[in-house]
Image 1 (cartoon, rainbow, N blue to C red):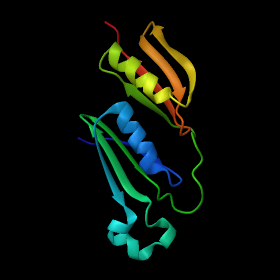
Image 2 (cartoon, rainbow, N blue to C red):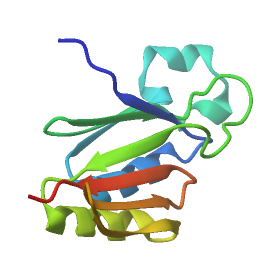
Image 3 (tube, rainbow, N blue to C red):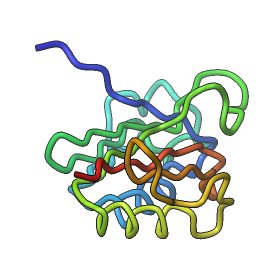
Length: 135
């Protein structure tokens, strides 16, 4: 089955951001550093400690990222919003609290006609929706 995963680009703080997301979302984090890869010989010395590829996996949750955004600087935010679909209300509240730490709450987590919902911008400038169906 084909799938689409979120792939985030950072300006040299991929390790920090992905460690933060692991603390918020749980799961196993893998970090591939430029200097430990075949790409090291082709990249400048200032790129050697950057993250070539990061993967965070927790069940069906997959979040990938890199510091290798090509030329230029990555703008925070943009038109993409990540949506965390929580397993239950407790999970939604825990995740919303952690993700919003150091960021900004756009819409507080509250019960809506379609379930529990809130929106925030995290401390890295990424927008998140946190949602949980209520039965």
